[in-house]
Image (tube, rainbow, N blue to C red):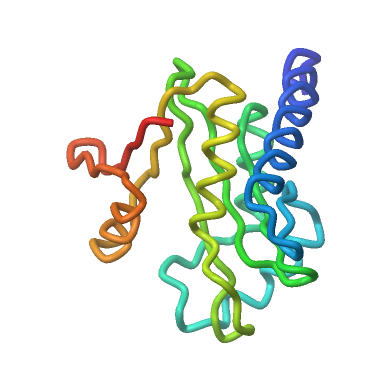
Length: 170
């Protein structure tokens, strides 16, 4: 790893942690914790592939490792309710920096226990990080189907067919 890559990783790690702390304060629910993705969070996803409710069979352990290496400016989130992983998400700024992409988001399957909805809280964290890095919009990339797209639209996002993404100003 180059020194410049390592420097960017450290610099953006501080920004991620600051954004997560701010998002946690904004949500202010006692048991909800906004953290970076750790080994503990990735281990919790090992149970997910057995779920029939998963829409995409994405391997968080391998996928995170690759994404982390390629994108030091990334945004990552492990959303916890006490000791239960609620959701994971990964995104990154566009190359021009005006948009923050939400590339992957997945909530813990319902079969693994009751959990409160997590997507609104994920968006709070993305909006905070977008402001921190001076991005003007958040893009949700490649919704898996029209039902999921319609759900995202309830949060004020607008679908752009040509780019297969939803967008909203921060």
